[in-house]
Image (tube, rainbow, N blue to C red):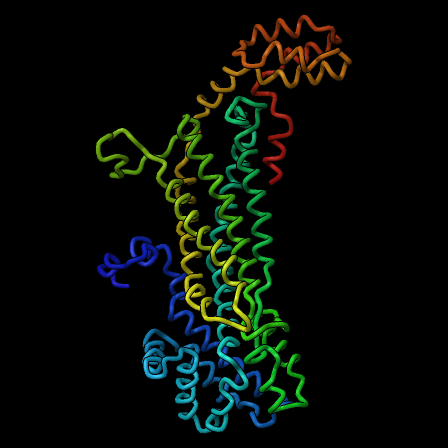
Length: 456
């Protein structure tokens, strides 16, 4: 889109954020959908020509196959516009592609005899469902998964870099047993890795079984052909899985799984955005200053956590759309209704807001700088977090009411190190255990946090 025209775009996906979603526009736009539909129609014709059970479609010569492949290879926006002009006459998007291809094949002497087998035995939804699965597969492989992996790599690097940096934990917003900054990054990295595996494992389905899912027309034309094997081979050629049990439409359960898996990834990242925002607000992080950037129209001192706020907002919009897709698309009245069609056209919008969120989050993470002095000060001000260690050792040595004694001593109290030392000194514990407890500091009381961070 012309940069000037972006100012008149209704959606920020194609306006303000167009530079961040360019790759998606090639895959999930109207042009992208037409390209995937064309890919399915051409693939089906070539697949039929390879089947000995369909003798009327002659095996293609190398030049004929190259001609068909070039139709797809050379498909650009102008060619897409030619299909849209046909659609304006037919008022049917899939039939427009069939007519477009008929014209192309008529121009090739060998392929003229195959025109009747364009869209052979197919219903529109055979083409559409397969095209959308191809679209989602391409979005996942080329846009979403790489963006998620980039965030994971950044989190892994931060986990390793700060594996040893002790940090006060907060449960319910209150001081809790210390952790390390690296371990907290590792936690998010582990969650992200797990959810990405589930996202990548979602099987995308193809439907190629005709008007109501029973191979009616296929069997009428070629009753002896093994149509399930033929269509399964076709789906497998594209890396998809054949759905053998459908109505007129593929039921979209796989799209719901896809959206739910992506939504869980985005939810993990929203959690990260909010936590990081909060750590910036209490001074654990500062942000690198960008020359000429303005933080506030009236308060010139401010460097706002705008990248994390932008990421949270866009991931929230994405999740709202993904939730609607997963709850709406698997529902269709009887053998089909058309309410899924307009919803499916927005799949790219959900992906786009996700991508915008990922880009903002990566930019924000790259700008963070840790204020180690502030982190250390917070630890030193909260020696009461060692109460857990003391009462656990008391239990080990059978001191009655260990938890209750520490509760009475420390709950709701702002203790200093001397008070805690006096309490430990008063305990009937072996000398070496008492010395070990007295040597503990909040900064050293981090358990296996550093190892867990380094292991991610």
